Amino acid sequence: AKATEKGSFCFFTQDLTERAMRRLQIENDLHKAIDRQEFELVYQPIFELATGKIIAAEALLRWHHPEQGVINPVDFIHIAEETSMIVDIGEWVLREAAKEAMHWHEEIGKTLRISINVSARQFRNHEIHEALARVYSEIGQPGFNIELELTENLVMRNPEKAEDSLDLLRDMGVHLAMDDFGTGYSSLAYLRRFPFDMIKIDKAFVDDLGRNKEAEAIVRAMLELGRALGLRMLAEGVETELQRAFLAREGCDEVQGFLFSRPCSVEKFRQMLIEDKG
Ligand code: C2E
Ligand code: CA
Ligand code: CA
Ligand code: CA
Image 1 (tube, protein in one colour):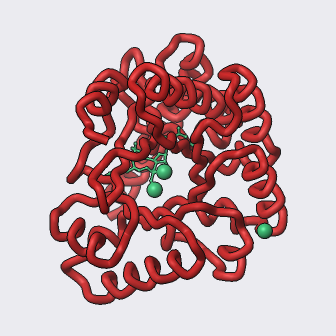
Image 2 (tube, rainbow, N blue to C red; image 1 turned 30 degrees about the horizontal axis):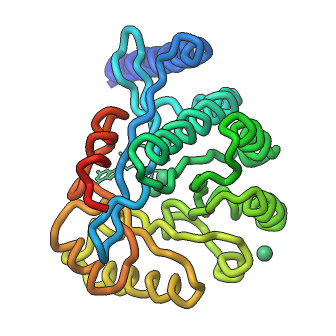
């Protein structure tokens, strides 16, 4: 028994060491990733349910690591957050996405909302406000249909301070969306006070539509709440026709998910816009 314990202990520490090493490696490589142009934004279309037209896109980050291939955000965003690298990366994302939306507007004749994910670290010390001001002056068009997505946990950490920061962002002309709604801690009192334009219902609830009566009741209640507060409602992670039909019936405004499209490269998304009859 002792040998086994010792053995498993060794295995455990080795595993931990490997993980720590990998983390350190990612941290080191992240520092160079912007300069080496290893980041890419992919765009997932967002559709208006009533018309089926593309009305927005969410920009999602991909990292082309020289040795490890494509790394998804779940495997590096938290490290970028902890080391503050997210501030520079986040500004890169904002600039890149805003420029791309200008291209759609000017070259393709499609004016879409462009949604960008904002992390807690960018929001805390007004880094996002400063980045936004810089990007506006570069593209020469304040407010250009930019939407910032913030999670409820992010804003509920310090709701009084968040309210001021959100009001400031709103004054800068951006749209605000509450991301992953229903998964974190939220307060109805603050939902009313915060200047959000839109709520994104988390995929976890959408997954259970058609399978689970409670999930259906919750989504129905969320949509009702959104209507009462005058917010646009989006359902994310829509994968089946059954889910789409439920959301359409219940009056959800917008949808996003693999049923319609996966996130696309710049080139593929541009092609999709050219072909979209909207
Ligand atoms: P999120 O903001 O909730 O983004 C939606 C995620 O769900 C994306 O994963 C998207 O590819 C995926 N998705 C969309 N539709 C479906 C579907 O129908 N089924 C399934 N299974 N998945 C779907 P992705 O791109 O891996 O991003 C994961 C998370 O990483 C994002 O979650 C967001 O929190 C974060 N993230 C991505 N890009 C950025 C960024 O530029 N900055 C920051 N701070 N965070 C980012
Ligand atoms: Ca998001
Ligand atoms: Ca989300
Ligand atoms: Ca307010």
